[in-house]
Length: 425
Image (cartoon, rainbow, N blue to C red):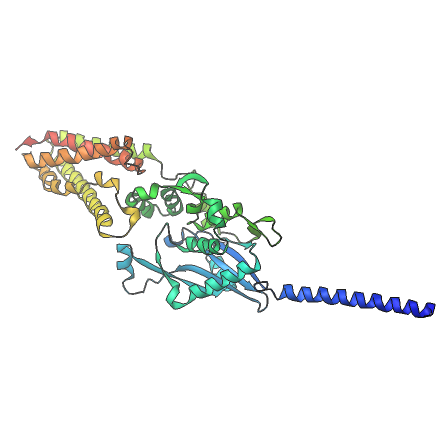
C-alpha cells in the first residue's frame, strides 16, 4: 500500500468514527427527547386575596404545560355553585361538596388579574416521570366520577388538594419537609387575619370557632392557605436525575400586582401583627361600661326613664346573647362543622338567659320583683360565665376566647348586681 493509500485509509477511518459518534449522540438526544414526561412542565400559580368574602383566603392552581402541543392547562380544586340544589342547606349543616375543573391557563390568569388580585407562578423541579404521574393523576381526578370531594375549610380545601397532589408524586417529600416546623400559628389566627377587611363577618366567625381552631399548626397544616403553601414550598428539596438535591421551586414570576384597594387591605389594622383579634383591653372596657350602665340604671329605679332604659337594655342583651348561644349549640350538636364543636363561648352566651327576659322586661314597673326561680337562673348564668374565665387554668379548656371573656364577663356581673335592686318576690 502506497503512502497515499495509507493516508486515505486513515482519513476514511476518522470519518467513520466521527459519523458513528455523531450518530450515537443524535440517537441519545432522540431518546432523551422521547422520554415520557420530558415535554411537560409543572407550575404552581397562586392568586392573592380578593374583595368578596369567599375570596379573602386566596386561591391556587396547578399548571401543566405541554411543549409538544403548546397547551397550558390550569387545574383548580375550588369549584362550587350557589345554584346547586340544597347548596345553602348543605353549607349550614357543614356538608359541602366542591369539585375540580380545568381551564386555559391564560384565561385563569386574566380573570384573577381583572379582579385586581396579585398572581405569582412558581415552576416546580419535577422529574419527567413525576410530571407524567401528576398529569395522569389530574386527568383521572378531572373525570366526573372523581372530580367532587368533601370540602372542609381548614383540612380539605383548594390548597390542601394541590399540596396533596404534589406530595403524592414526590413520595411524601413535602410532608416530610414541612410537618416538623411550626410558628405556633392557628387556624383562628389565619381566619381572623384574612377576613379582617370584613369585620362584620370576622367577629361572628371568631365567636363561632371552637377549640379545634386553636390547634398549633405545622407548616404542613398552614398550607391550607394558598399564600402559605407558596412560601413553604421554598423549603422543600428534591433529588434530580443525577442524584443531587435541588430546590423544589425553580423560576418564580410575578405576573400581576394587587390593585390599590386590596393592597390597602393587606396593610389594614387587623392585618398587622401575628394575631389580629387580640384586643382584650378595648373589649374589656366596653363590657365594663355596659355592666356599669346596667347597674347605674337599676340604682335609679325611682326614675321612670331609668326603669324603661334598664328594661330595654337588659332584655335586649339577654335576647341577643341567648340566641347567639343557641346558634352555637346548634352548630355543635346539629352540624358537621367540626371547627365549631365544643365552643366554650356557650358558657358566655348562655341560652338560659332567654328565661330571664320576662324578668328584665318587668323591670320597667316600679314594683319590679324577681321570683326565686329567676334568681336561681341568674346565679347559674353568672356562675358559668365566671367559671369560663377561671377554667383557663385547666388543661381541657384551650380555646382562645380572651376577647370574648373580657367583653362578656363584666357584662354578666353588671346584670347580676343590677338585679339586687329589685324587690324580692
